[in-house]
Length: 217
Image (cartoon, rainbow, N blue to C red; front, side, top):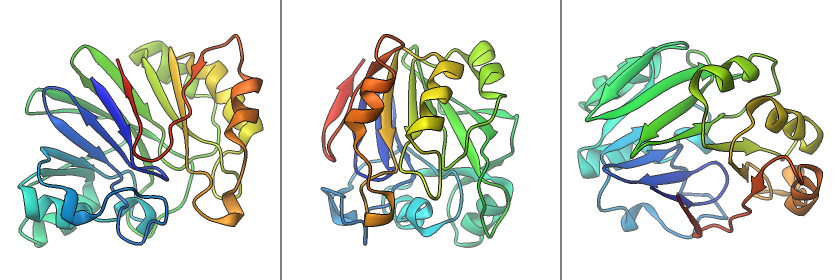
């Protein structure tokens, strides 16, 4: 599996399918690609409805025929737009074209439904995108049950966990790899990912990706 970072909290997972999570491209100052560059996608997963996460998801689904996956209320909105959509909720697991998607809790806000995280299992690897969240102790339970190989964790503070909390989250989740996200897009969430890397040294491998870079598993 290949994990490509497109800035902020946007990731493309490439394996047996192409899975976009929180595809915020338009108006994202850190995105190295635009909506016009997205030609193929099988599944689009959205963790919550804030614009920097819902992003271009509807347009990508319309353009590529991808299945929109999110919490129930957002899926209904997608269906009203004529898109293929699979609604789910926290604690549930679905299979979309052979890709397992499990929805987790996230501590955040949203206008529609409840914010979430997701664990995507594909090509014998599992990736935990925490969504926008503060730290919560049930991350230990998520780790025990789903054993994610890779955790995508916000470190930008103010609207999500900061570095201090993200370090504890790594301790709870204990993944093989951690990719920090949701930082540096704008001045209010400007932090140094190297500080995060240093703080978790010896716990796991931190991979700091610049927008457009990738991790191969």
